Each structure stands twice: as C-alpha cells, then as structure tokens.
Image (cartoon, rainbow, N blue to C red; front, side, top):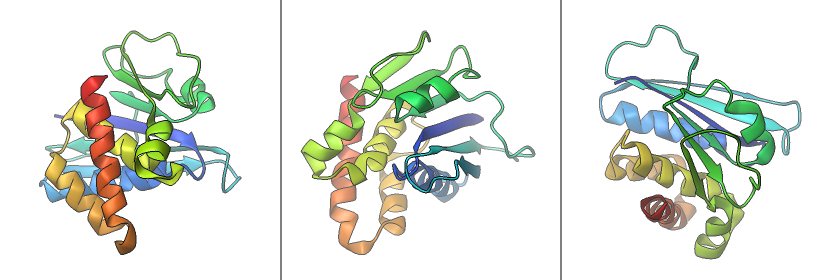
Length: 176
C-alpha cells in the first residue's frame, strides 16, 4: 500500500507543516513514512512543496517519483507540480487560488482557502482544511489519528480552531 503524495503551494501556506502532520499520523498507525520538502529562496510567497511517502513496508527511496496525489494551493504550484502525477492519480486544487484547471483526468476542486477564512476565521488554517480533505479523499490514515497528530503539532491555544479546520476540509471533500 505505497502512497506518494505531493503537497504544494507558496511559502507561508503551511504545506510543509501539513505534510509533517500527515507523516506523523501514518507513523502513529504503525506505517512507515518519509517526508521531504523544498522551497524557493523567499520565506513567503515563493514556490513550496513537501512530499510524503507512506507504506506498510520499508521505504528505501525517500523521494516521490510518481505521486499518487498532488495538492496544489496556488496556480503556480498546480502548473509546476502535477506533470509527473500518476495517470490514475488525483489532482486536488484550491478552488480559491487556482482559477485554471490543468488538463488532468481526475481533478477535485475544493475552495480550501475560502473555507478557512469563512468557516474558521483565518487563511492561516487553509493547510489544515486541506489536510482534512486529503484524509477523506485518500483514507490514508483515520480521521481520529489525523486529529491526534494535528493536536500534537499545533500551538495549544489553536487546537480548537484546527479541529474545526480538519472537519471543514473533511466535510468539503465529502461533497466534492
């Protein structure tokens, strides 16, 4: 059950944090996981991607070669990072920030950033909204496990808002 995921956007959107949380959740469930990241020289606004491989067995190569899922939180990320996506894979786009859909057969559009603002109160929670959606779409870890992983990683005073963000993303993916 090897799954290769690429989460992408721009610096400051929290895709690296989301990938770390997802990898930690997989480990909590007894799976193997590796996570890597890269970003442009700009701290905020530059290209950013984080990749996660999750498997029931050993992972000998820590880099994603053919992702099964690509999350794109910006148009630039969508255009740059979906090209090597598995033809049977899934492209998940932030409908709020990706106006043009790349030519790919399996696309899910969710207004991730808009939901973070309207339902949770700040765009800061868009990465956790996305995480809730990804967990629903893939079933890669259980919802309870991702909740524990988020709660263990975010600042204590934001746990309640992050739990709401997870639920918002989960619910949005159920309707997508």
